[in-house]
Length: 518
Image (cartoon, rainbow, N blue to C red):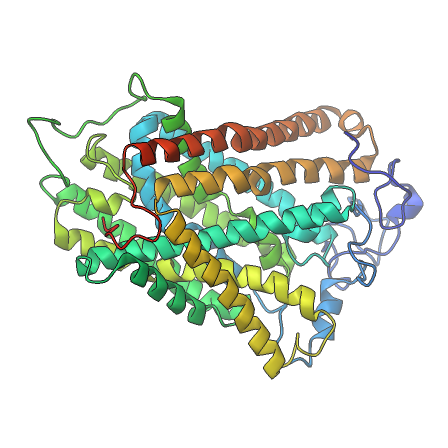
């Protein structure tokens, strides 16, 4: 497959950059900041300085009316007089958004995943997936520095696949579906919480509607800078929730459903149990992967950062916290609940009703906010396309706010329908991971690496860079293959598990009033 073509005019070149090209003014980043915008030590005032290497763009402009050479600084200047400013996020605020995205309810699926995969393979896969996501997130960041005009992952999708409009539309469909599924997932789990805490005092459909309505209201802020404050609270309360659940699992006498005669004492497996099926193992792995993979939102976050070069600070902070928290919570809760008494989410494994309700209650902010975050990302995508270049983008107009609210309302309506049509937790995680994370977690970023290196070093980039070039080339091909494995085997395993669940009557029916509490 050819990963680029055309002459150098803001497009991929078939030959390595010449000295003349290397001395051109940077076309990405803030021109006033030496070394910024994807240049390895490049100083625009001293282009001949040691270490100065220009990183090339990887494709032509995505839109004819987009100035691809517009720096972050220029973008900030243009919206300086606007009532609504978008380039306002500092790296701590971006870190708060990442923490709220990753430190979420899905952590409570780790004990279940470890019970299926075995403790040692589960912990190893946790670290491996975290490392892969960290690596690919760096690729996303580098791509966004080269292309500061990028507004979201859909722009990147078109750039990666030869500037074709079909690539933009295909990415947009997956992007909206992924985000809406996550919103629906939070409607589902919000209803699960309300059923648990109230002992099913209202029809489950009603609880889902309540969560969707409340989430819609919380989605109304239009900038990530504003949402970052809510994200900080969400991540904090989620941490408290999983910490309490872990402590309660350790101090209570027995897990829920404890039966020493029929089921025995909690059994902890170091490796998978004999007879573990491919479907069960793949679903458990997909649960772990889903929790880590969130690169789909990174371009949107970077597009609102004051200084995108600071993004790695936020990335490292959240990755370190993820590995520590996910591993400890998964391992400790699994150790005390065992293979026989483990359910997802793990709150259902707690035998003491008070412990279950108290720990689950601290999850309320993230049950609302994470769906809100993805709704905002989707609404931003649609709104920016409709009102690009109009006064409604940067001013408080009736049309602007009414349209923003209407877009959000539509996304939450579809999310509510998804929650009612697909009323299960673990398998929904696996299905979303296989369908969408295959592209947004692996395939896109393997291709992005190949496109960028070809733009920098020419068609034979994997040869001219020696062992480093060959290693990077092979590793990113492997990333693409991992994505294809997710898409094929992962989707098969997810669908098969759902079919088995319905055959065993493990799920409630669509639009059912039956309780789904833990």
